[in-house]
Length: 279
Image (cartoon, rainbow, N blue to C red; front, side, top):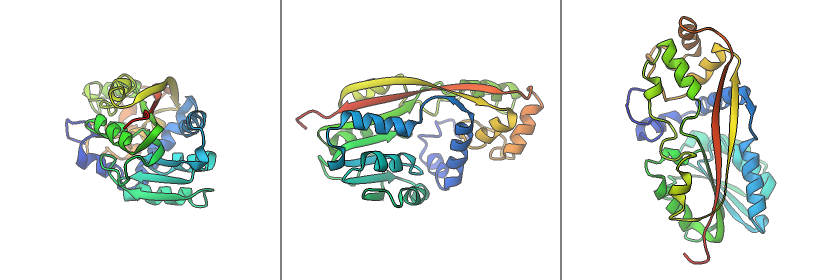
């Protein structure tokens, strides 16, 4: 990446990140292998939906930015709603999601759509989930307003994001190794919707009923493991010859820093908001 803009909100860069399922799968795998503290996010979302929804089996549920379909599958299995809509802008992600929800115990439809303009009527959904996707919007308030439009009276939105300083240890490591001297000054990938501002973004649009923050901690086993993650993230400006090559990244890291376990952290924030009785 060479743009000084946030890669998650730059339209061209963001679309390239999800042209293939493999890159997101590799990033998710590297983090899951490193995680030593923190609940499974999709399970927490399902727990929250169950706790705050009176009759989930009568509901229409929309999973925005569904990605590879992990949360969609768990929502389908745990809530068994009348209809679940898995929505993403990436055809590659929807193809993966469609395979993952195959055989789910409820009706699931995969839709390709922009979350700024949902192909849903007003007052349609009892639950809208927006997990790890709002920070792709330059102005997340527009997406939250669209969520409010499609919620039924009393419907709930479950929004999940990360802290702006997530994985700060990796920024320091990349800068110390000299492979991106400006790593610590790069804008946060989560800059537009993060743990510190999600309530302020939501409160003028929907009524907040629950917020919780949970620290997730990650222990990368060594520089090879770190490099496997770095090769999938668009945050850094790495030389083109190494940008997506974990082996080259690992070799460059070893030339400047000691090969040892690396611990990083990220705060995951869950927010539940409700649409009132009136539009």
